[in-house]
Image (cartoon, helix red, strand yellow):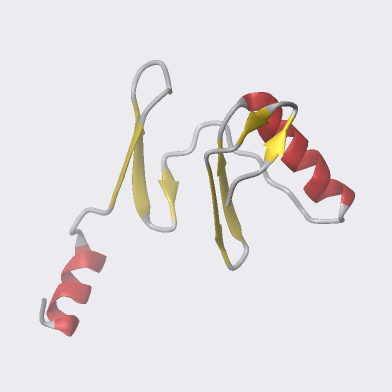
Length: 85
């Protein structure tokens, strides 16, 4: 989903039940947070995101690029065995 706020567009917005992830220009993100709060949503902002929906997030040093992945730890092993993949 793409939103346009303050002349910038948000690149990605991920929504999963009650967990949201918004990525984009800081002023655009702030505009969306204000809109959510105005509509009585409870908003928790995390500036140092490392895990989202059991996926690990690794940013580069400038925080301009990120890798999103899921390791095959205990949970991944259970999924692998149960689904026979």
